[in-house]
Length: 106
Image 1 (cartoon, rainbow, N blue to C red):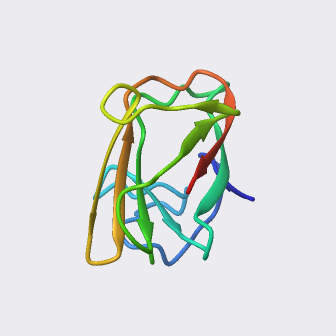
Image 2 (spheres, rainbow, N blue to C red; image 1 turned 90 degrees about the horizontal axis):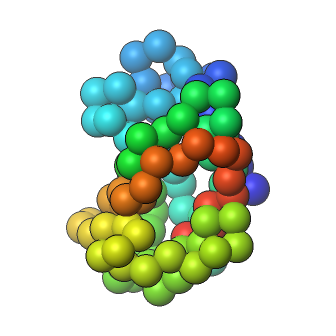
């Protein structure tokens, strides 16, 4: 499982202007999908994440069939919005993250 947190150093990511793991140019976290989707931790306890957006490269197929936030299933249109184009998934959570959570996207 990967991590998305402000102190990660992910140099080389597009738009990551200050090496903190967040794409300032696009306003999103950039991740890479595995064969079975992606799972990662988002640390929001120290610094809350306001309706975070994720760009997942190498996404296979249509919009996600299942997304969980620390084990809680999320509903499309209510808890998140998502779209896929040319193998890139864009996903926005429709809630603020104020704790450390695990996000699984399949």
